[in-house]
Image (cartoon, rainbow, N blue to C red; front, side, top):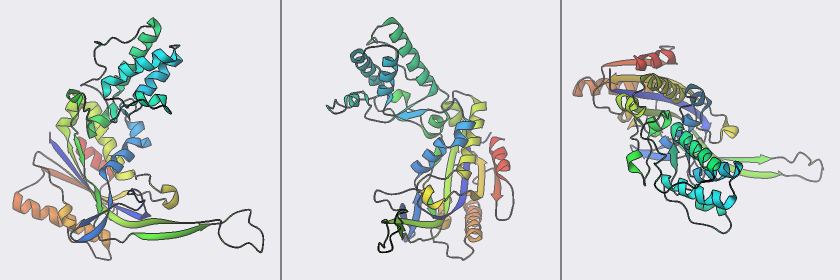
Length: 351
């Protein structure tokens, strides 16, 4: 079985702003001396994890990433009849297993129950926490200082297995990510544009009153994005405690989400949902490599998608010529020429 699976996707976004910077503008990067649009890997992974597609395919095998676990524990204890003072004290002791807690604030008594660092909890860990809550509430007994940890090295959380987790205070429960996701970048240079807009007051019917009820400005751009994903299949199976069936479901959900799911930024304003127009899938034990160099020089052809596909496939062929075969087998889906299908891509990576 091939160790590595590599995916190369080309997806065209219409005018949109799916991933914003701190000023609300589309994220960019300078590549080959030209400004490109960029969608961060964090934004993509978040969109995939939160998608209905992922939730349905991996029901019962998704983790929860939060700083609020101590607050959830407190609320659960109170609901079970534990007095508030005890519930706060017990919740602090339990949540302290997962990381350093924030300090107490006068205007927010729950702040001292929050973890400083986001922690990603597997279903098994959430079940263990709930079991402990039930036990403490039923016996009205505080948690022991030497109680075994509620964290688990082995679990079935597909999102943790794919994208990893880091627990600074409990590094032995860290998980190395089996899936590496690059930032998606446009294959051509771009200019971020400004959209000046107005809104009309529906109750403004007076002839002598003119003008807009509201004026605003938002930034947007459009582009054809290249996305690279590298999957260590062996590590994924290991992260899922050797469960090959679940690993297969995870791979299938990941590929479908990468092809279909768009980050949610400004969707109501732009309706920029996009499917991948082209996917190149590769399998093999060879050292993985991105093909982003195919777009180091911005594509300028008016037939942008065919030219981008040509550049990508030509770069792959040239890499194979100088390095030897960089994969044992490949499969292509090309929506423009109706070649292949997403179903065939998924079947290929699961073989």
